Length: 121
Image (cartoon, rainbow, N blue to C red):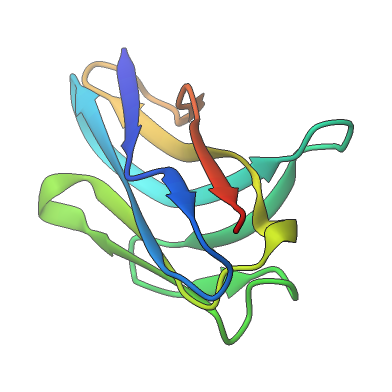
């Protein structure tokens, strides 16, 4: 199995920055696309940004120009640098990954437990 563990959330003032990290662990053979989703109270979970193992990134319109997704393939870790944070960025941020674990012939989709980001003065 594969476990995703997020870190880096917290409380920040509007205009501030946070960096989220998500490390995949377990009997991993290969990790394909990794990404970040978020879910605010009363809203559906939405994609924030994703990145392929070849470092091709995709962003939601709300994240473009403010957030940067990156990854370290050797560490099976994905990062989300968030700048110019706004109150509307407040949400539970989830890590997501398509991973193939040792002994498996296919990829499976995995989710982390989430890390809270609160933007407030």
